Length: 257
Figure 1 (cartoon, rainbow, N blue to C red):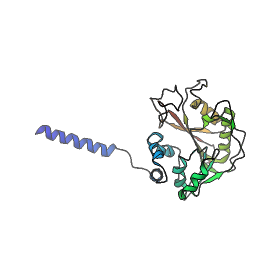
Figure 2 (figure 1 turned 135 degrees about the vertical axis):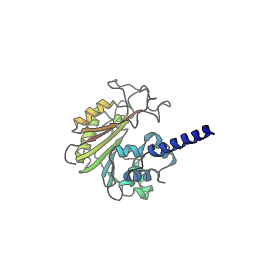
Figure 3 (figure 1 turned 90 degrees about the vertical axis):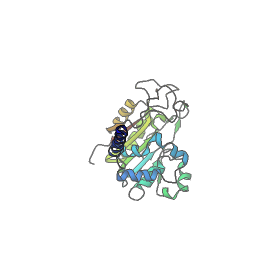
Figure 4 (figure 1 turned 45 degrees about the vertical axis):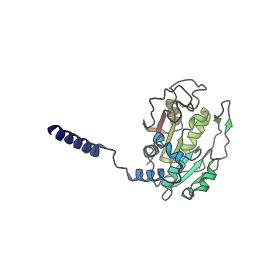
């Protein structure tokens, strides 16, 4: 009988500890982001990637607020657009730019994305010897006083000079104190470029390049650290895809908050 009572006591202690030390309640912006993540405008395939990409935690790390003016560069198929745009729809503004060819049809399909604005750019993606990697001339986003610029897994797609132009355009668009959030697949530091790693980016090099544009590094996070990724193989390989190690960095344009 005493063992039974002891067992009940231990179960009660564990339950109490779980209740006390479990996940903290979501912040108001966390709840807003989560509501967008759960929205019906996102497909089942998009939601399947949430566990890996951790969009709520990532956007909270990037200091997203509902009243921000946000620019997403190289939005691809709009995976993050469907999450961020509804968050800022009422109080802020959302812009997509640079590589928006796939966006117009998606934006037209969803009333929730009706306020998203596509920034036209007079810049052309110039192919290089590596399929999928491009050069870019100098350009401007044509907008000022932005609070947050985001780009997800894109810098590796461009040559160093093109990356410099992207970072400079982000810097010029931001207000003093505005943030620049960057995610990309991790390459070993100082590893020479190969056909296996070209879709990866050295995080130390990324920091140096972005700081060269005038930014200051604010923070980094291990949200997308993946110990199983040995950083040896192309990110599209079956052993890596969906589980690549990614660096996640937050920068700030110096000046008043």
